[in-house]
Image (cartoon, one colour):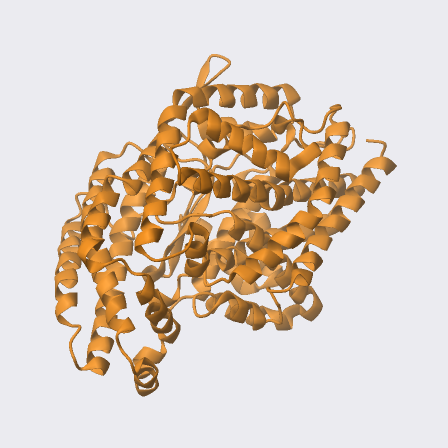
Length: 587
């Protein structure tokens, strides 16, 4: 079996004549769209909605082929050329999208039209949200120029950052290794390997810190300019609007997280003690595997990971198990790290084909298996949205993590239920290790980005200032759980989420997803198999309503801090169990 993904379902290669045919069709539809927004509101709205659906399909097809190729081969010139052409065309597509939104915003009797049309009822939430969004569009007189400038502004700097990350080679004991391969050594059982890899990684950023800082400053500077043009009071307010989320929900979640930080710090201090550290846990040991003496953590082959995921997810739903087998068997997954391939992991939907593509950098740890479960959760979410119009599948960032976290939780609980005491301890620690990232580290990222945005209003920030802000955010979040002298001042450089042009604060959605997914899993445990169809319907509805309403469909009140406290209490109890087991085993 091959372990690189197959993109031939999109195009055979970059010489495929279908690329030029689709590109020409995309241009033609863009030109046609303007002429279809006429006076006859019902027929015009139905027709232009069809056109926008076709534009979406062609753009995702072309864009996916280029971006997925670049994700595994950052220097692929034909892919970059196609991406550049799409970026140029994106100005016209964005202008058309804005015109479409203005058109919807100007329809006084929109609700009446929706009631008259079965076609419009299938996209009702999108239409209503577009009417609200019309109030946040740029002045048409400047919009085209602002969008064109973004091509050499935020978009260009975002692309540059990705290339810097993918091509950065780290000097590790005389060998040149990709950054992704070095970061994977943080899970190595040998403490010297972890420490050496951390030091090599930190040293390597000196080669890219100045352009990385320029990228971050430029992207956040552009974001601040754009919110003025779009009449949002802040970047965070814009993100919440884009996320179909209100400030009350965010504040409730952050309140509960702050209350739970002392428990996570207790876990980190205990882990530090077990590894022989006296001043808290050094950053390079955050992901250190720990277990009772004589216990060796299992190293999984990719074949074993495949079988485990099919089996465990199949117990929840045979349909999901078969789906995971389909993903592996049909080469939807690019598995191993290599030069030119980006770090981390992600899932990309190919909605019109009812498929997804998953990128991961698999090294064999249980965490890597969990990452596969996470990304295949996204893929299952995409499957649950099959057949919906494209404008109704864009789940807001916080809900987009629901299925991925649910899968992680299901896998972790299944593994711990089957484990002997020594293995159970190791799995419990691994689960807490990852949860600490999605709660404590994500909170530090939220604090860091908030500080950067606030200070970027006044000036560009230097490398030293960015490092200091990151360390300050880690202090506020991790506290005495981390060794004050051995933290990670370059976390702003290695996390791509800060560099998405037009998308800020891609951090709190992970904490939301972790805790919301935990709450959804609790519902499943309470209801059993009867919950499965509710769960699938929840996933299908994620792009069809406000977060509070979607959550309310399964009885969850996300505006209440008590819900978030109840989810966090699951992990507080795990921390207590972890410490008790450690003491019992004299670890």
